[in-house]
Amino acid sequence: LNTLQMHGRIHEWGAIYQAHLAQNLRRVGASIELDRTTGAARLSAVPEEIRAAFSKRTRDALSDAKAYAASVGAEWDRMTGDERIKLLKGGAFASRSAKADDLSDFASWRRQAEARGYQHKSVLQDAAPAERMTEAARLDLAYEAAARVLGEQFARRAVIKAEDERVAAARGLVAAGIKDGGDVDHVIARLRARGIVETGGADASGEPARTQIIAVETERDDPDNPDVTITTTRLTTRAHVEQESALVELAGQASRDRRGTLNPVQIKRGIEASGLRFTGEHGAAQRRMIDHLGMGGRFAVGTGAAGAGKTTLLKPLVAAWRDQGADIHGISLGWRQARELREAGLNTEAETGGRDTIAAVSVFINRVESGRLDLSNRSVVVIDELGTIGTRQMLDLLRLQERHGFRMVAIGDPKQCQSIEAGQVIGLLEKGLGKVPSIESSVRQTNERAREIAGLLRKGGVEAVGKALDMKRQDGTAEIVAGGHGEVIARAAALWDERRKANADRPRFTLSISTPTNQDARAIGEAIRQRLLASGELGQSRMTLAAIDKNTGEHYALPIAT
Image 1 (cartoon, helix red, strand yellow):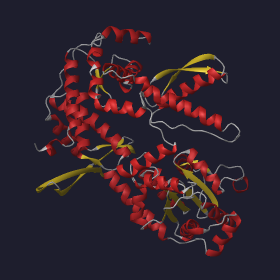
Image 2 (cartoon, one colour):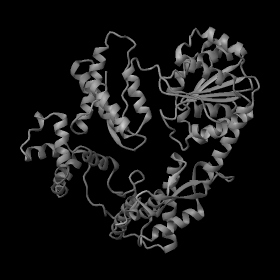
Image 3 (cartoon, one colour):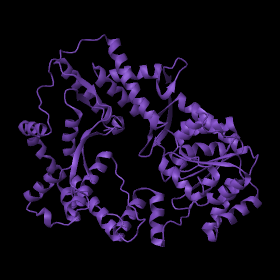
């Protein structure tokens, strides 16, 4: 079989299935909408909180795993974590077979829904079968839905695969109805002809701006068959191309403007004022970065590994700029990251006179554009965590710099974090600035083994990351929890409690917990809450508030205690 013909098509075919499912349900009078998160056909009659409650069960197969273990004569509770994993790998499909019986248990489903205050009647309700649309109207509706899906993807990524466009077109047919799989090509033809809505953009009349899709094809030989040529198509938009071109040009112009740069004497005084000493090989690398940022053009960029001391090396520069009489502003994508710039000496009362000179990027841009913040060629703007800034925001900053003439210095690490919005901004800036200097060594790790682990994680790839995780498990700094979602939540809460108690004598000790989703964060929070209730550190609940997750729309109860 030439399986290359199937490559990238599986999700498209899944969406076509969902479109047919939606079409058939509409024929009998059900109200169907496109679920923008999953791309599936969704029954409008079932509330989101009920759907979410049932979907949670699919991520926790622990009860099935225990039943499977019992069926082969094993005692789950006596098995080690590795033994459990080995058992499940050997019979993973068997643990799924229980779903067949579960799917027929409608009475159980109803009981669980009623326990949450929902009594299901019918997805048909009083809806009449959907009216037939003309072919053109149906495909136009599918195009509008597909354009929204693609617009959201292009807001996060500057380049996507052609397969993503086909999936978006098929999802548009979920919303509008489908005749056959050939409809996907009809929707794509409309996408290419009419473009998509540019997220955050508007035309002269205030309507959402549309931007053209640009397709680029590349060819390469099949490594397994020299007679076969593999063609790959990548998509971007005219808006992304224009933004990136403008960003590269403005960055290059600013980097070549050397007016008002620091000189070696000023930098030396700044280092003395900071009280820092840059010794050894790592210190020499930091010192070279200080010279690059301080004596470069009006826009200078430096990168470094996690723990390279990027924020620390800004301290002498801040002292030197302040000695120059500059007003200095610190920004990053979020407030929390921006406040880390206090370590570099920003935001002191002597400098600001009570004004806050640290802000999130979006807030900073708004302050300057609205006139609430007055900048000049004597101003310096320091950007931290540059890798998190998207193309559009970086272009906005460069345009503000061109207008007001301030100096801009940016530090970050493309391997440590990436932007939420579209664009690999450090890679783009190198096209305008040339090779950006980097500090690859780190001082955050306290011993050679920890530095080796950090280096492996930074290198990336299955082999390096696998080795790093094995080393961390041996050291006790990483755990793999055997079981389901509930076991992982319980272990996270227990680890929080262990670390808290072990550091009870350190008054400034703090802990943070990071999770993939808000739902996971709430689950861990509830597990921690139960521990605090049991220990008497938290009083009993005094009231319960109705709460909502703004990102997902999920409703939940929020108990409040003293």
